[in-house]
Length: 430
Image 1 (tube, rainbow, N blue to C red):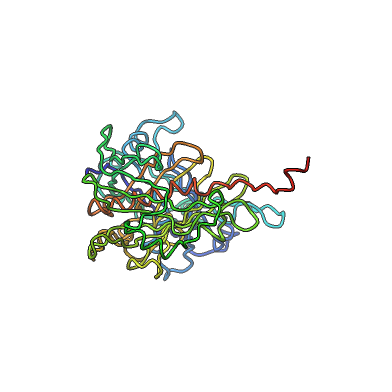
Image 2: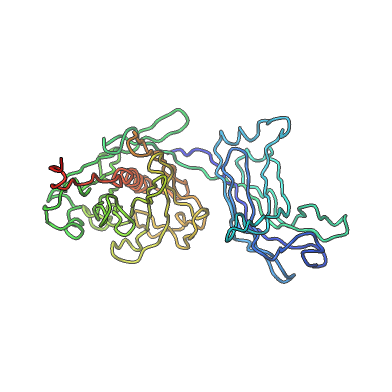
C-alpha cells in the first residue's frame, strides 16, 4: 500500500509575558493580562481554531514545550493553494495568530469586550512544500502596539511552529455500507481494491464465532417489536483472499429511550469492534467499543463515542479515544486525533494483531490516527477513511479501522427517530 503525502502544521508551546519591567495593565496599555488569554489561529482556506494562552508572570516560569495548541493537516492541493498568489491586498498566504485578553460574549446581560493584545504572522514559503521536517519558528517575539521603541513594555508571545510529514492511507467504500461494497485505496486517480465489506442484519448463525459474543450481549427473547429497535447488524471486513480480518456488530440494541422516540444518551446503542485472535484460530478478540446516540436540538446531531478496550477485554478497563458530534442532516467527520481531543490519550494504541510491539502505534508520536467522513440521514454514504501511516504496520491494522468506519456510518441510520406508535383509541376518535 502506497500512502498519500500530507503535512502536519503544529502550533504549540504558547506563552504570553510582558517584556521589560513588569507594570500594571494601566501603565502598559494592556489591561488584565493576568486574566485568561486566548488566541485565534488562522490559515487561509481552513476554519479558525482557538486556544488558551498561558500568562507567564515570573522569570522562573517556563512554557510547556510539549504542548500542542493547534494542528492543521495539509494535503498536496492545500499546499498548492496556499503557495499561489492571493488578492492584491493579501498577495501571500500566512499563518496568523491573534491574541486577546478577556472573554468573548457577555455575562448577566453585560457585554464583555475582548481586547486585542497583538498579532503574530508567518508567511507561507516554498519550504512548506518540501515534505521535510522543519521548525518555522521557536521562541519569543514581540507583538502588538506597545513595542520597546515606545519606551513601554510590550507583550511578547512564545510559540513553536513546526512542519512534519504526515503520510496517510486513503480508503473509500464504493457504495453504501449496507450494500456490502468493495473498499478501495485511493492514490491520485488510481483505485486499488483492498478489502470487501459484508453486511448482514439477521441474527448470527450457530456456527458463526461471533455467536459467542451474542450469547453474552443479546438475550433470547424475540418478543420485542422489530420496528422499535435496531439490532442484529453485523459487518465483516474481508481481505482479497476472502479471509475475515475484522468485524463490527451491535451489542446493545438501538432503542428509543423512555418517553421519547429516539436513542438518547441515557441509553446509547453500542458496537463491538473485533479482530481475529492470533492465539485461537476461529475466535475473535475485542478491540474497541463504539457508542452512539442522538442529541436533539435546532439541528440534530449524532454523537459517536469510541473507547479502546485495554488488553482486548470487552468488560475490562477502557480508554476514551474520541467523542464526536456529527450532523444528522449533513453528515460530518468522525476522527481520532489526540491533538484535537479534550482528553488526550496517554497510552499506546494497541495493534489489532496484538504483537506486543506498540511503539509505532502510540498517539504520542503525533496526534492524528484516523478520520472517517460520512453523509447524513437518507443520503448515499460512501465513507472516506484516512489512516496515519505510522499507525498501520500491516493490512490487518487498516482492516480494524474499516470496521470502525462502517460502524460509524451505520450509526447515523441506527439513530434515526423511531415512528410514533398510534394509540388504538385515536384510530376511532373520528
